[in-house]
Every structure is written in C-alpha cells, then in structure tokens.
Length: 266
Length: 201
Image (cartoon, rainbow over all chains, first blue to last red; front, side, top):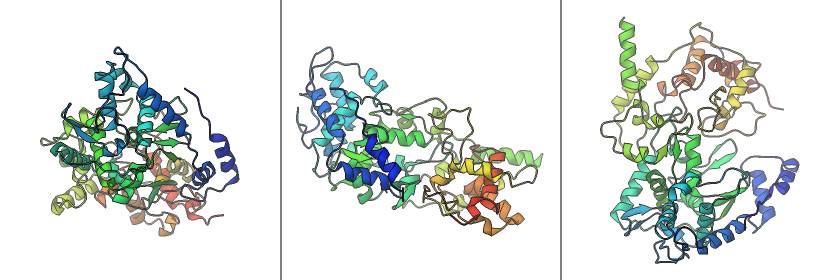
C-alpha cells in the first residue's frame, strides 16, 4: 500500500482564517481538528507490512529480528533503545539494528538503503521510516527506559553529552545552542531543552512524527540529520556513532517519560 | 612589520580550526558524517574559541585562558575600512530576515543571510521572531555615537570579543556576511527611519 496523503487542505483553510498569534497556534488548531486522527496511522500499517514481508536474496521477513527482547518481539522494544547487543558487541539505535537485521537475515545490501534512508519533502515514505513508525507505535504508552546497564551504554551516553556541546562549523553551532535552555523558540518554533528530563521526554516521546508541512513521517534519525544541516555541518549518516550517541543522551535524559509517538508536528 | 607578525600570531592562536592532539572524538565525527555540497568535512574541526566553548554545563573553566582568548578576539576585529558604519536599512531588513546560507542545501552563489529574526525581536510588526537572543526592538534609541557604532559593529563582527561563548555566530570574523551586508544590518538597527525604531501598527 503506497498512497500519497495530502492533508494540507484543512491546514490551508486554517492558515487563511486564523491569526498566527505565536507558539504553534495554527498547528495546534490543526491537531485539535484532527483529534485522534494522525495520517501516520497509514504509515504504521505500512511498517507492519514491511516487517512481515519476505525480502532480499534470502527471501526472509524480519520476523526473527531480535530488537533486544528476543527474536520477533516488537511490543515495548522501542523504549529500550539505544541498547547494547551481544551479537554485534556494540550499542545500536533502532535504525542501526534494523539495518543489521536486513543484512544478516534478509541478505540485503544495506549501503543501498543507507544511500536514501529518509524521504524528501512530499515524497513517498521510505521502508525505514515506515518500520520505525510501526515499532514506535508498538511502544505507545510504554515508559521510556534505556537501561544503561552495560559499560558501553554508559560510555555512549558520555560521548553523546560531549557531542551535544561540541561547537563547530562557520556558525559555531552545537546542539546546545538551541536546546540547553527552556521556553525558548526560533522564529515561532518552540525548542525543547534536551538537557532537562521534561524537555527530553517531550522530544524523545513524540518522534517519529507526521510532519504536516512535509507530508511525511519523520524519525528521530532524520530529525538529527536535519538539525546538523541547519548547524551548517556535513551530513549525518543513519546508524552512525554520532547519531547513536546523541540518541542515547536524549533517551536516557527522557527515561521515565511516556512514549506518545507517532506524533503530529508542524 | 610588527603588525604583520602580530596578525600571524593571532591567526595561529585563534584563526585556524584544527584537530587537537587529544581530540579522541575526531574518529567518531569523521566516521559519522559525509561531506555534502558546500558542507565539507573541514567544518568538523574546531578553532580555539569553539574548543573553549564546547565544555558541557558544570565543567570548571580556566577563566584566565578565556579572558586571554576574548582579548585576542577583540584585537582581531576589523572595523569598516572607510570608517562608514551605516549602510541601507532596507537591504539590512532583507539580511535580517534571510535564514539561508552555508547549509548543504543552500545555493552558494546566492548571498548569505544573517537570520537575525531566528533569535531576536526587531521590527515590532514582525511576529515571527525567536527568543534565544534579547529583543532589539527600538535599538536605535541608543544613538549613533562613535562608541555606539564601534560597539554594535564589534558585536556583529565577532560576538566573542565581548562575551566569549555567546551563542551568536561571528558574522564578520567567519565571513558569513560581507562588510556591506554588515553596514546594512547596522542601518537596520540604528537608522531612525528603520522599522526597528518605529512604533508598530
């Protein structure tokens, strides 16, 4: 099922009728209008289909993929990421783990998948976006709780903290430039304080999210990549150490919060 | 000659971005990013200011070293060659509202923006302003004395000359904006005719 959902018609009407009075005004109204309906529900279904679809040279599905709770266990798996895996002896985020399963179980060329991990604005969503969205929905309402029990998991958190404050590029931007204070915004966009539990829980628990302005579901991996684009840095690679470290920093700061994804965002 | 040597020394101390000898984060960064268009891998290196200002919250800092670094930034500020600080406020308004420039997704043949509105309130009629920086509405009330012109220019050229580790980019020192664009932004801030200095509708 690959349909192109265009939900901007009611949004456009709201733009024309509503004053943008600050914060997320018009987007809040759109969310109210949508109620419990999130276009991401179609992407959730698509992700589930991908999980059970035989693919690759092995013509295998991902059903035997171990996301940390045992082969094939998907409910509640998302909230434990990033986590250490014995079989690879590394800390992985969900995207890195899915790539690992695609390679080892399905025999697929993951470089081809990494070459276009995320869709363009208004594009069809990618398989990775759909899988992550479904797996996030499989943890909806579950408490966020990466364990930090393995030394490598703790080292990954420390690396994430160092990277969070690392200033570089022509504009001297780090993650902290925008995300170490509360109640701040860029233009009208509110910025979560990711060094605080409240801010990190709100952010970590609401991705992946359907981006109204882009017409697609976005993952946290995409969110990080787009932040670095705006930081004027080179392009962050999916499943890379920097991506995993920063997600560890956020997820651990968010621990105790509740998974509400997929969210609905501007 | 003395000035030349001084200039070279400053460049060695604060100008060039490098990988520090003990930068164990280098391999992590190089393995996690790929160059894309104008966003090259060189951008992952840090200069002295960036390295000094990357300390996580709560880290104890060497205040003497930071004071020395700040003074070096102040010494390196380049005032406008012709002594004229104020350009055209209308062109300055465009620079203040333009958020493009130097991203991998931007066209490098187009002028960079200053994106002032991302963080500052300026003209009272523009509601889409950010709050990371202080409001600059009515900034022109501070007048156009030589001291005020130099202060404002220096803040735009290299914010670290006054406040080391400020979040604000170094628009002149890093070549983000041209001298003419800086003059235009100066006028947008200080010209009594600029909307920044007019009451809102």
